[in-house]
Length: 272
Ligand SMILES: [Zn+2]
Ligand SMILES: [Zn+2]
Image 1 (cartoon, protein in one colour):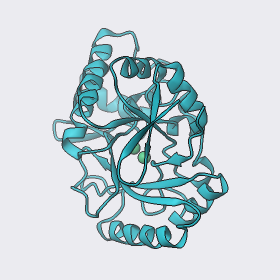
Image 2 (image 1 turned 60 degrees about the vertical axis):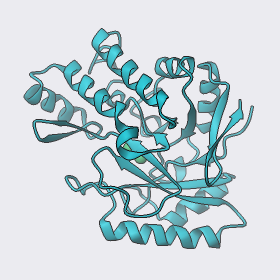
Image 3 (image 1 turned 180 degrees about the vertical axis):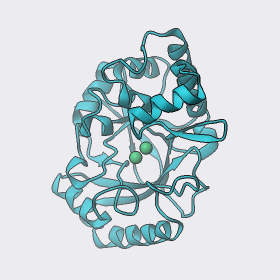
């Protein structure tokens, strides 16, 4: 099987990551990766706690440009952004975009999907009369539009609400409304040109036992002809290659025949 030596989903100190871009590059090179892409959180007006600032975004782009040149004989480096559904339009030129939904907007209020389980539960109680499935329908409804809205190349962590559902206590995966919601979003996104990422970030942080999207959803995406790539949504140098190879194996088991790599300008399939 091919070895997966690329990670396009990485964060640095410019947003909520622990390391500088150069430290991430060095770590990736030490782990024998052939390319790394930076995907700093794009500026989001309503919540600046986790994203890059406006002027930080410009410095981020300049620093990556310098690193591209400095390490050009060692590793390929790409400039990306992780655009939230509610981020401002990209402030810099990028090689690629990851489109993600981190909030559900209800009655003018942004509910953070992945901050804490308590915030999700209290928001659902307050804004959805305790109906978690209405909340999930709203989430997947937003996800279904994420490519339209962000023009992303990669669909980020498709089933992010799983972050707090490892014990199946937040919601029931067999619930029909939930199943219909994710299938509808998957169908819509498969029609777009974007590639789904198999994202091991929830696993590396100890929240989930499966990547986003979990295997059942991956099998559905494979069956329906969707495309996948692999990333670790790394927030520090040690997790740059976290379970990437295992994820390629999982993709294969879920029915994918190919996995997509970025070559600097486009996504190309490689047989697995
Ligand atoms: Zn994200
Ligand atoms: Zn991310």
